[in-house]
Image 1 (tube, rainbow, N blue to C red):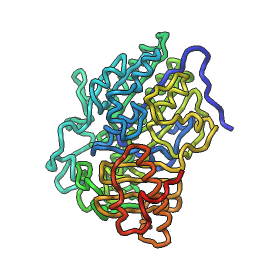
Image 2: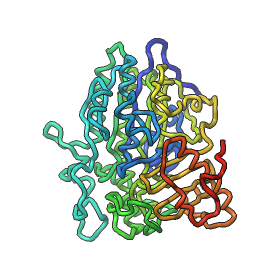
Image 3: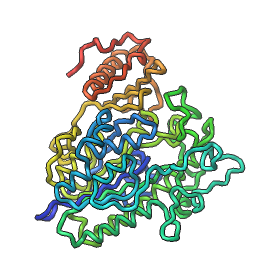
Length: 469
């Protein structure tokens, strides 16, 4: 049995929430990807408990981060989060009401009024990194292409490169500097603190310093096993902004280029996260601080012929999730199916404050402690009215009502989701069971989308079938 982190007696533990933008689950070296350099996240994994199957429940808009962040700060499901941002008790607001000194810096992609009512102090912040809009002639898109000399390290390109006090700094550095300034100001405060740092990395355009780009020569990057030149059908929003980052059809060279830049900006962010952890250590705060690390959603970056996150494959719906500090056993993993919206109630339990009545998601504290192994036998996901998903530990069913089709994957044997089994007669019973489970979840979550067109060619039944308990 590994060691348990235990807080010092006295006040509630501090909290540092580090939230990324577009960071997929297969991006932490020690957990699942030896190709990427993440020494500070690797150290955080050793210090805490990592969830290997954490999921974003979906989105009602193409900017999936908006819905994800709404679920994070409300602790509610997808179909209640949009209203919950305006009516419920928000994450930072609740910690402030419980006596915490609260601070936010980085990406905020919900209403400014929600931000203002959530935190005592608000540092530098910004909305979406592509706020200047999309135009196909912009050199950040459709790369690589002859004559396009766009460079991730060119500080004249804007976006992640931001001006501060007459110098150009990277967004990850700007938010980290603000976070460290706050930590140093909070060391003499009698109150516990809640620090929320929301990085724009690794969202495109994936800009960073040359030394991080040099870690990943494009010709050395592996092409994922589920690479396709194009997705085999229009799954909804097939030509959205994210998908224009690389040319059509995709090539292995293009995917290598984009993945090399993706890894580079993550390694730079990892360095900045290390600075925050070092600041906690230098100020004798590390042992009394719960650190949680996660991301709003994942990203395809060339998998399944896609570049973006407007899909329900694991590369886009699974996220990293790590809890370290008081209450979290060290160097352990949990494979329970969980939602990232459980961060809110889990933090409440770990620091010993009540959870607001408006929070719907269950706490992960019993899973972290080992009291229970699982909270759900299945989880669901949604993307607008185009896609619905139900996933167990062994199988995934994705429904596409507009396309009148569905997919079935044996996740246990085919974790990269390369073989669609939906046309196999021997899988008809399984598809029916999963479909009924999906519809049960839809009722529970107040999702009124009719998925039956996705199964129009099947005899597996629908809502008239008994709903399993």
